[in-house]
Amino acid sequence: EMHLVESGGGLVQPGGSLRLSCIASGFTFTGYWMTWVRQTPRKGLEWVANIRLGGGEDYHVDSVKGRFTVSRDDAKSSVYLQLSSLADEDTAVYYCARHNRGVFDHWGQGTLVTVSS
Amino acid sequence: EIVLTQSPGTLSLSPGERATLSCRASQTVSSSYLAWYQQKLGQAPRLLIYDASTRATGIPDRFSGSGSGTDFTLTISRLEPEDFAVYYCQQYFTSPTTFGPGTKVEIK
Image 1: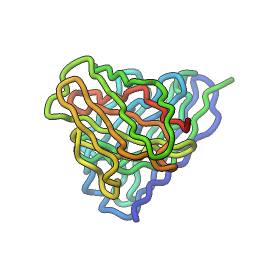
Image 2: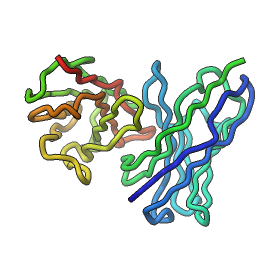
Image 3: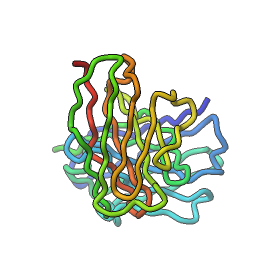
């Protein structure tokens, strides 16, 4: 059975940093792109970043470019999202998901990031 | 960026009834690169339909998707108690992929 488990969320002050992790199991991690999606009551679901299998290519939504960085460690079946220069509008539940031909076919349970002073 | 609009915002129905949810795109979504997700309270979204009409693995056949171009529909033929949830559409034809705001299907 496939599992994605996120961790690393929490309360952080504006301007702060956080590193989210997602550990995958139950499928061949090296065969898939991986994605981060966030969700807020105001903006709904928003794709944040994705990274190619092997890690040679990655993309980020414009609103986080230069502040967030996606990476992966295939040896650990893990994908990461480094968040920096955090602002109030980055408060969200962050999900990692398996990216399969454009759709997100398996999701983790999410980790909450709260940016507040 | 393609903007997706979903209607209605809330659908109040009884178990056993048919649900018809709409997703409209601001531009043509070619190749029917349109997906539907279900999200229950406190849970992550779950993929139901991709390529506009293909059910994901394990999805019951009471769920069906249709449409092309800018207008897409998710139909639940007979609502089961576990189907009351929020449903989102997603286009993956252009980057960035975008989601609609969701339709809540609630018990009448």
